[in-house]
Length: 117
Length: 111
Image 1 (tube, one colour):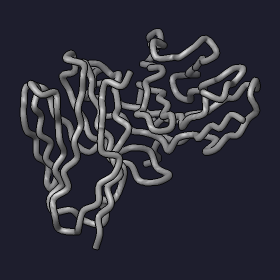
Image 2: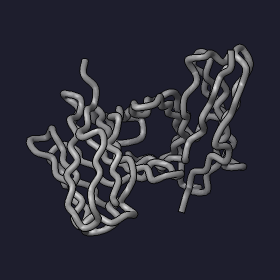
Image 3: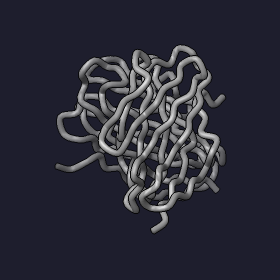
């Protein structure tokens, strides 16, 4: 079946512009995660959605970052007034919700490489 | 503040030999550990995991060892194959869905 897809694969923007990154999870997966990987760093947790529960936004680095998930499926991560330090690969993952723990295997998309000039 | 560290950014190994990847963590609350593998232009894929109640977990050619007292885990790949050439990420969790990842180790298997 289809895996997690993300678009665009690459995005170059100017400092101060807003960007939207899209994630299509695996059909039937109720849990959705956003991570980012800055150069030379590990993946950093950003936000978690599970069903109709309030999202866990504890990883968002600033209020310029927001995300939504419409209809329990597609998710959009929005970065307002982008800064050069926002340059990173943004990865989305989805999982079946079993216990809401690390045993819920996360399936990752290929990521969106964001470059802020 | 990196709570999971992979101090070797790269590893080169001959086909058929053992690959040993190392990972250290600082958060004593971590109780579940995972390894992910990533090919270029693809997302990371789950490889193997271990709970803190165990010190070893084996799956085919892949074995993960956990040393809780040293806050250290390792991944052994035996025998290494050309298809194992990839970036390997160590990840850890404090029994929830948030995974903390290391920066990755690039493995190159030489024919």
